[in-house]
Image (cartoon, rainbow, N blue to C red; front, side, top):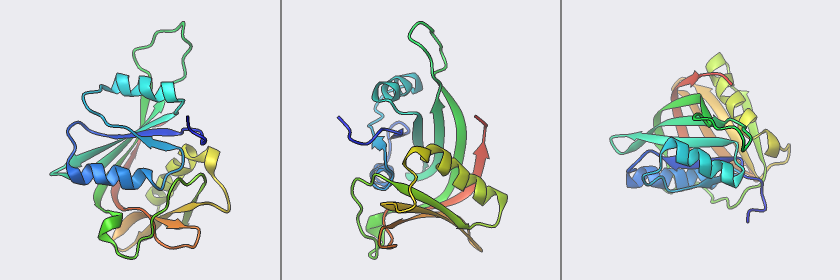
Length: 189
């Protein structure tokens, strides 16, 4: 069904706002191997089973506060054989607390990128440990599609205002949303 190996399932918390739905559509358009799915009334267990059915290794859930995307929780699926029955099919590994996002449609200079198959992660503008941790999270998740000549480059940028994640296309022009990250919590592998 998919020519690219599926890496992650991207969804929202229950009953997302229009802005959060727009954000995950925007976010999934620049991440190779990520498919978005409607959450509906699915439990975490049902999401894990759906991700396993597609062959994904991660689940990314975007939560919101007052109608705006405010948190990204990343879960790693736990491998199991069909003879084993486990209640816990996934492990919470990272939480990114957002201070804000900008959608592509809110930035006139942004170019659309469709169906990227490769990505690179650029932490060259990082100076703090937290900034490098964010880069490492994305490197680990997208290790199978990392490429020195990518379709999309994910930049982790640290400045006086904090840490932000931006995306650039092959021509180094902005594509996709901008995420402002307030805090990162790593729960381990």
